[in-house]
Length: 397
Image (cartoon, rainbow, N blue to C red; front, side):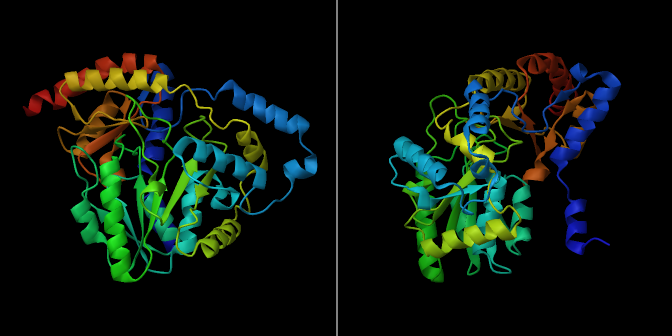
């Protein structure tokens, strides 16, 4: 028999994946081209050609013992040093290899840092809407999630509510900017005010509260919006980064944590992350991916494709009467449901539009659309969205 904890996790298994599987079922009936799947944030833009060249070069020109062997749990020192330099060049920071821990994607990184800092029943504050797997990551490290309600229509964090959510057992706050599912970028003003709250609460609690910034969408930002680098505002920040979106490599599972020197208990924190990397079964981030990434720092996929998709989908959906905050980053639209969320998702599915309900992101009454699809898919879906508006928006005016 499986554990009771896993039974609970199976019961609340990702609605995103469930909708993705439903898409495959509908495609077998109606044809893939007649199913408009906006469920999964799977990059549709190919990785830059330099990435493929880097993998080939590493395989052909790296000693097999180095390529396939163990290394420090933090990863190759040369790779970490190169990443630190790249961050410094972009953001004016002063990191070195000792501040970087290579991870199995951003998800692996979040699990590592949570396992490193949490005692049983320590609390982690999550700001709705958020990626639903955060709940499982926290539970996996025996912590408890405390949810700050959403703040529409801007979806900047409600800082007053956040301050009230921080208690004596609070060990961390997780933020995600650009945000999944809203596409909102947290402003510099928001981050400065958040930092002051955390500094105040840390002193009151006589315990560091870590700010974990989950940043897989950092490079996916539009209209020249600035995505502030969070370590500049709060010393006890840990940044989790992934190349899944910026280089279109979600299946390769490669990313890193940034742990600043200024973070409380820095040396023990890095050591704890190394131990967590081992005991969670990663041992170290994949060696081939590490060495290939080192050759691609500064490269990004062609995000103008997502920007073009964003403009078309946002313009048309708002024209049809749907309410949505225009996303500044990532590749998601978060649309307000004109009727009951579950009913809306079902009506959309009848029109072969696959959307994910906001309940999966702790924000009922909305749906998420992942527009990392082909431009043609969006064009072809518009007639169905118009029908959906006629059946829901228009009837409720």
